[in-house]
Image 1: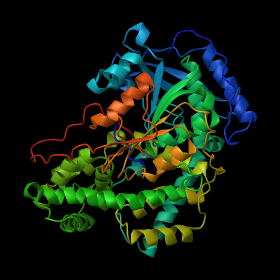
Image 2: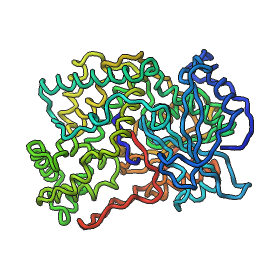
Image 3: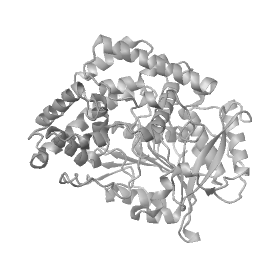
Image 4: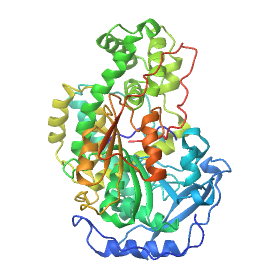
Length: 532
């Protein structure tokens, strides 16, 4: 699924790792399963040594950092090891209130949660931070955790570039060549290690992290892609789970991973793109982009056509424009700034658009790294169509009804058609009745990045799970956001273990208020950034 990255322990207790108890035959006691036990026992015996965070992490002194060693290949647990970076703030509540560690993953694949402990200082997280050590980490391949790279970051960030909604045969041929070169670059840079970047290994790493934190059972919150490998974890290690939150759910059906999920995502973004344009039209007195969603689309297309001929600032072409406005499909926090930039551009002021859409040299390395991990995990996780005619047929048909994101999403994933590493059979996510404690699923009804049916599919596969729905809303990732009702369910679950019987609904959070062009949209307090 196309990723949009927005942002950038315990004592000396020695535990014997619990033996994995697979549900549904997903991961029988193979060499890899035994390897997890070996690695977890080793991690429990040598807890993480937390200390001052390296300057590269850019974290405040209140956050402490360390590393945990995990096997590159769980079939060889005493072989090559890789270090995963970990961050933590300790629970600030009274000793009797403390409930262990809460580990968070923001998705991607390819995103880091090293920043997560910083939410301890935010009002919406105060009570949770009183009860839990807040733990973030960079998964394998990400940032300083044995980083993966497939391409020179300068080439990855090259701009301006095109984004034709109806690509010509010549353009398709060009993108095929780029996809092949990218896949070859991944293999060349990673070598034999490339095949080990998978969701199942991310789940295994999570169990080793659990042991290294001194936790007999895991309390985990995953957002976006984090819900998928969190669900894989629940399948492999149901007896290791204390509490688990799935925020904005990837459809875990093996038939959806990952090719079909990406097609569904592109279709859903078309509806969310219209939601944004409808809101802009409602505030035409501020933005002057059109009185209807169709008129706003005409304004957008006018800008796109001009950028095709004359890139803004020399770096913002159609592809950069589309990527910037895709963020408005993920988060309505971006609606005011994006509408303002479009409005200003049509008045002759290109500066806001350049500020929002131009690639930033300082983030090129991190962006390329995130994309490399994203590609490796999704390509390794499942079989993808190997013949471009299949991609061409499916995306050409979809683009007729969902032109906004379809082809850009296809190009991002196309290296999987030429992937040099073995492609696995997806894990059949599920748990037996009574095997898991109650788990909490959070979902916005109009989320495009992870369409709502995925939440219902996960609930079907994990008996005892509860779905909290933010009705008629589409922001991707709703934990700690603007909806007090959602946050209330989250807090009650994490602090008290309480859930509704099966499902509950919350009214949508308020739509953004249009602001003057001189104002700036502030980050919403308390929100946990994520990606996917």
